Amino acid sequence: MASTFGTLFRVTTFGESHGGGVGVVIDGCPPRLALTVADLQSDLDRRRPGQSRLVTQRDESDEAEILSGMFEGFTTGTPLAVLVRNNDHRSGAYDHLKDVYRPSHADFTYDAKYGFRNWAGGGRASARETIGRVAAGAVARRLLAEVAGIEVLGWVDRVHDIDASVDAGAVTLADVEADPTRCPDRTAAAAMTAAIEQARRDGDSLGGAVRCVARRVPAGLGEPVFDKLDADLARALMSLPAAKGVEIGSGFAGTRMTGLSHNDPFEPGNDGPRTTTNHSGGIQGGISNGEDITCRVAFKPTGTIASEQQTVTRDGEATTLAAKGRHDPCVLPRAVPMVEAMMLLTLADHWLRQRAVDVLPVFDERP
Image (cartoon, rainbow, N blue to C red; front, side):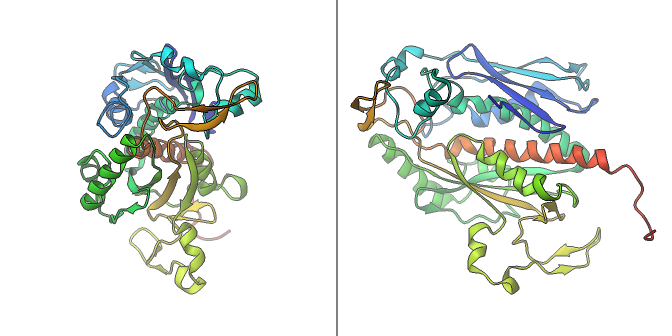
């Protein structure tokens, strides 16, 4: 089922929304990295349900258990296995969906592919699968901070038609976490809160966008042609549930600029060339250039809503559905750590790949 991501820093997620638990196996994490459960838990707590009135009220503590790959507080270089048990799963709440396809959900497509599906909470299609990604991303966060001082931070940039104004170079984790929306723009955050709460009352849902920045990424990460850093990053982000679009740097806004205004001029820097602007989003020719890597991910409105919609049964008969159960009226607040995780996993993988090829001394003079 293509549940593995990465080349050298490889993660394989497992588990279903209403099974015994979910988690991840991480293969390729270097040995001797200091790591604790608390390092994982801080990111998992930002992803978990029930953290505010704006998200699903499923009551899960999402406590991580590290089952292997650790000894005396350090990674051993062998596979890390992380498990999070499901405690508040109520499969019976989804009995009404057993033979009905939810509009804009994965119900029909899973049936079309496998001839069988887990209708309890969506199974692997549930965003609960991302627990493994976020846990693995937390390990990648520790690794990247240790070896390169890299910092990755995301925030909610838009909900529905409400846009935030945030300085990507100055925003901090404290700014992001100060509001349940995870939007650092307080005026926009208040409007987003009101819109999300209204959507819940209306039995509806809202989409939006998450913006993410990676700071202090060294130049040289990424591969020419097919494994370009921005290509792998886009693939990683588009694999998230409900993701419908990705922009790197200027993204689609760059199509309204000319080459003269869009190009990033170089100037001398202390550690090599720097650019005076960053329309490229820190990546040129598929390889990092030492500037901040910036991206934006669009998420569709949650597919499961309480309002009545037209649909069909597995037998192809027309019917209507007003979904029951617990769901997010807007995925954006909980999507922030998911976006960060996929950025972190991509960067960790490419950092290790660069270490694998960068084994000869740099020429002082061309041979």
